Length: 386
Image (cartoon, rainbow, N blue to C red; front, top):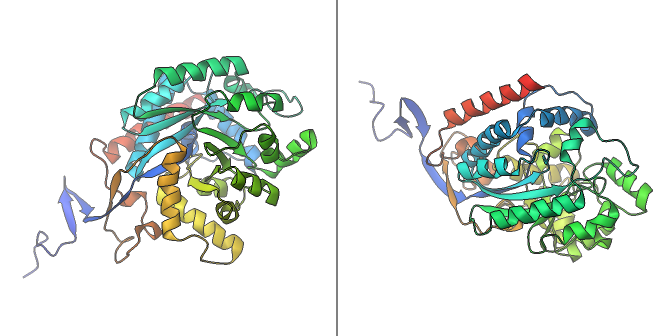
């Protein structure tokens, strides 16, 4: 006589005709400290380009296809995917200013219960040498005065909302003139401040040629670095750059899956950490939305670079992926998420080393199939316009 599939010895439960894994441990909810939600439309598409700069042209085409309604739909589904993956907070590095889509992206996050730090981004020029703007870049650009007014209005509008923090961002040293860096940094003096730094060697070379300083040094001279500031990527740094970030108590947000996908390189995460920089993690281009993959990527990339396996332990990774990450966005989050027992996690004692976004129990009110359908529809609409 065969055993009934409903006997207590089963390790799976059956709901709505589907097999779902048994409940497992609760883990801290994650912080996604660097996201460009609209990049989600590029996942699994053949976009071409042998390096970051070639990829960027296709990204610009997607940016040019978005209007407030479509971006709200795309961002809402992308943020829902983050919630399904175990994220509780996102830092959205926002520079789609013309027309301004800040409201669309904030309300998209609020609609799915994701805390959002909207990092309104100053973007004034194409490069150090006065290069002409790509047509898509024109919608990124605001004058310093117009940007300051806009970000101040946003901060007033969402003051007191527990799901929303309004922060600021300097897109990069190539996109903001040196004389505007200090003013931009002081615009919301108590809010999170993020800046892309040294993602590509070409950025460093151009900055040195134009100013005689590295991006980190140029930003230091403007007083940008502080305990509320996050250096995003921080991939190609010299020893002096690392020392500056450590001395100022800044954060550095590493985005391992995007930096690998775009062939950016491997940043000096342990050197930064050991000088006092607080490391955080982001999904950036959203090629992957999986906080476990980002945390493991940080450790695994360091192993490849150093030849050692002991650079990052699980406790340090949890701090980067949760506590320090939320703090860098202006949130104090103690939420927990459920991780299922699965083939990936079976027998393990530390889910960070084995689990994936697929092992996270969906939060109430979000159905994974509906989220997938919403994403597919929004992405199809984007590409119909490209």
